[in-house]
Amino acid sequence: MKLTPELHVLVLVAIVTALMWLPYMLARIFTRGLVKTMANPDPSFKPDPAWAERARRAHANAVENLAVFAPLAIVAATIGVSTPTTVMAANIYLWARIAHFVVYTLGIPVLRSLAFAAGFAATLAMAGAILGAT
Image 1 (cartoon, one colour):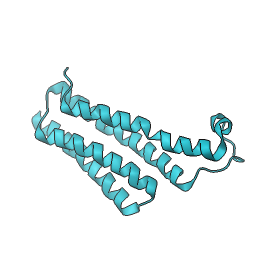
Image 2 (tube, helix red, strand yellow):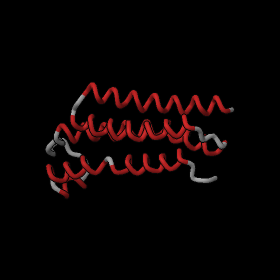
Image 3 (spheres, helix red, strand yellow):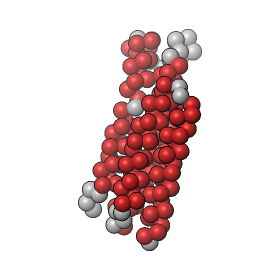
Image 4 (tube, helix red, strand yellow):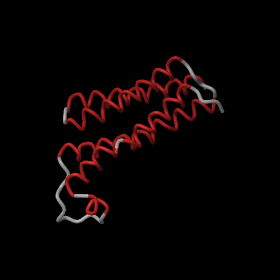
């Protein structure tokens, strides 16, 4: 199987998703210190800053959505479907997930929902293109 544009974007999405934990973990280290950050959770520890908690939730959301998008990109490559629609959907998905993480972390609710919706629509477009090609 060759590295299609959709799989290339999937690799980028995976890298971005993997790196999303850095901001909130750095905030936790700054807030609690390295030793308490590596310790087992304890209710006596200082809570994470609000923005860091939002970043953690945005990261969890990215992981949940990657579990839906990734198989679609892999199926498209496996069955040889690579169209302008699937390439565009993959790229929209990538940028929508980046935007979602940023605006969720910043606490901008309406933009967060719009970014999520764009990623969801891209996922549906990818699925539709696959089903339309079979």
